[in-house]
Amino acid sequence: MTKRCWDKFLFVIISFFIIYFPISAQAYEDLYFKNFNLWPFFVYSYNKISKKRSIELLGPFIYKENNSHSQIFSLRPLFTTVDTPYEKKVYFISPLGIYSQNKERTSFKFIPLIKKTWGENNTLYNKNQNFIEIFPFFAGKDNNNNTFGGIFPIYGTLKNFFGKKEIMFVLWPVYTRVKYENYKATSYFWPFIRIITSKQYPDRYKGAKIWPIFGKFQEANTERSFTLWPFYIKKEDKDPDFKSKTIISFPFYAKEDNPVYTRLILLWPFYQQVKGKKRKYYQIDFPWPFYRKIEGENVKGSRLWPFFGWKTSTEEKSSFLIWPFYFHNELRIQRKSILYFKKDDRFLVLSKLVKISQNNKPLLREARIWPLGYSFEHYDRKTNEFYAPALFPFRNKGIEYNYLPLLTLIHQKNQNKISETKLFWGLYRSERVENERIDELAFLIRRVKGPETNYVEFLEGLLGFGKIEGNSVFKFMFIPLEQKK
Image (cartoon, rainbow, N blue to C red; front, side, top):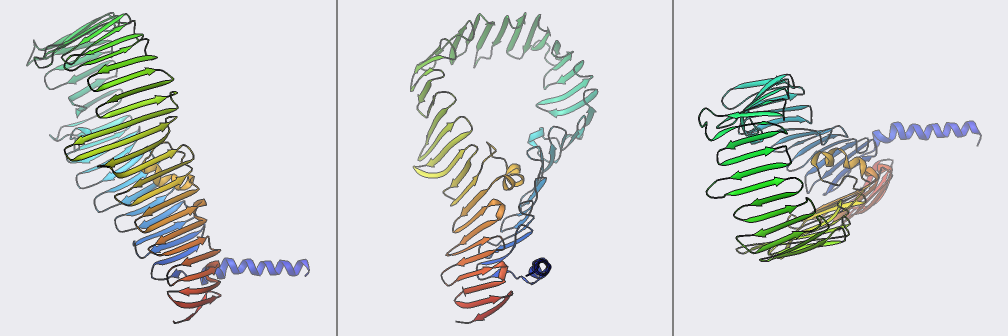
């Protein structure tokens, strides 16, 4: 064949796959699945048992899913929307941005620049009904319809924030005024000058400081003072139910005395001693953090850092070996007829193996070998998941929706009798439901195996043969020839 004829032949073949193949190819369908695979450009999958329907465009970059409890759309790595009957969430540029909406509250965050909330009973912002922050601007309205706002650090007020009735600042940190329930605190050039006064309780709330030279305050039953901070610091609580006193002469001496224990520190951090009062307890650290010994009622422990350390009590056991190589923790809580047990092993901090059980029945297992892989199993829900690699050493919904499908080469999920596996961003995928399994290698080959199905097809139906639901099927040029059983 001459070079010219060979070029024409290749042109015909390529034209066939570009034009005829996508138009003529048909989705595979049986009682369990309906699939159409032109990976990486377009993949459609419908599981008739779980009612999960998904569409993938350009591999993992564009994804849409409808299932029995949610609707998901992802434009990775930018954002993902998740709609459920109870709530709508949008994760964008994770973990910085999140929008959430439910019947009680709507919020929008883009850390650290924008924060906005509106709705009712917003405990996160101390029940502020409306709040918006587009740094450095902010504004809001509380439950009493009091408006506030400002431009940080020039001028601004905040109402019912962070447990305070009102916070006002001018050219922060030049001037700040904070109103509490029973008194007012005024600061100049924070943290250097602070004065507190109270019109309602002038004898119970008063004080001033010029830091670090001196300071003295009384707030209800608590008295605090310092001279040449941190050389001398004193705090005394005269509450009849819990009297306590702390004196610090840093770094030479510190003593804390309360109804529960007495703590003595000499030449911090080299020597520390703790003695219990209500129950037998003795702890000594000398020199801290290298050596520790604990003896007490239902508690013992020892440490020779960084080689080993251990502590055991009625409900908890913890230890480490060659810090930070290995950490171990056990938590055992008995409440009436319920026994809760958690075992946590960590390796070099980021890798871990966690097991939780109740009444000696496994509840869940979580394992991460960072950065190689991660697995999670919930026994009651009969679900488990595995993916590799696991580049993030923590779990975050936004990261899992927006980044994991781009960064993982293997991803497997199982729930009850349904399992899904993807390799290399969906180049190979496998799905099992009840007794039937479907395997696909892009659009090149599909294999379906079940009790009454044993079928293979190539190039999305260009050629196919076998049995589907007991019927013999032969497919050529995307045209099926079926022989009923």
